[in-house]
Length: 152
Image (tube, rainbow, N blue to C red; front, side, top):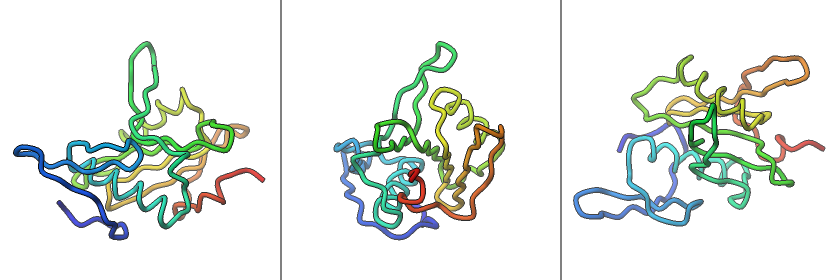
């Protein structure tokens, strides 16, 4: 798999038949190793190991219903009261983060209404803070620490 613009982490990878699988620390099981999953696992470990996100407040492949259609958010992080705080959308490294990617996570946010959205293809990472009072948003310069995301 391709080297990413994320700190190295120790992933558990195994071969299952002619395919590879990676251990998902949040789902606590092996999942098929695809380029997007490679990004997800590195980014989840980055959030936990370098940004202080607690694993107990994170979930992968969270189902939502949008316009009577079932969708899955790649990762959702929850606050102390189990309310969604962050949605993370991943793409494979060869897929550029684009307006289409941003539109996808914004559609998911119509359901969850989180204050933060993150996008990553493993090479580029974006964090967006949503301001519901003013009806706008702003791109942050960096992925914040977990402690910076929680209200006082």
